[in-house]
Amino acid sequence: MQRCALITGGSRGLGRALALALASEGFRVAINYLKSNKEAEAVLKSMGEALSLKADVSDSASVVRMASEIKKKWGRLDVLINNAGVTADAFLVKLKEEDWDRVIGTNLKGCFNTIRAFAPLIKESGGGHIINISSISGTRGKAGQAAYSASKAAILGLTVSAARELSEYNIRVNAVLPGYMPTDMGRASPAAMDMARGKSIIGKLSDPKEVTGFISWLVGTTSVTGQVFTIDSRV
Image (tube, helix red, strand yellow):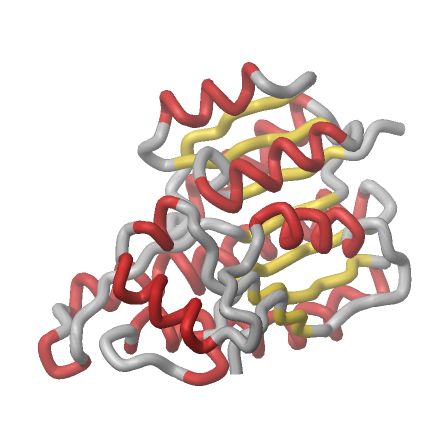
């Protein structure tokens, strides 16, 4: 049986790299996006059997519809990668409430919505993997990123709780902290990118190919769950 994967935020950056990597390994891949329609279609052209799904992961009804569409199209889901994420950098006292809500809604509630909607389908498929993309900002905090750091920290607790609850259904849940990468989001802040490179023991940013390679390996494991993996060299 051909395995199927869904990647939220899969049209650009790390999500795009993950989609292409899993497709090259024989997965049928569904790409979720919100605004990047052209980018999503471009990714689909580079893969075999694939599907693009426009949905706001912060909206539970939209996520449920997405789950229904995948079930109707493929009848199964083996891997869910919660990659969709946004940031709204500002010092805490100046952070707008709507920006806080948007970041928490996408990054944290988005994970909650997708896990709740897709866990039953993964269970029906005989089990599988859920990978939540977090950040080193969630373990250390970062000035000017209160909302982002809070959302990524909360994902770690959500990951372990979900791993405990879903283990009886052969669903493994892990979190990956990919580190600072030269993707679209990373390049948007050259100063932050230079700072990340400076804090690296070896003076390098994280390599998207190494991150996708690690995740490809992780979704092939059978006994790893409830873990947090940092793919970085910063100290």
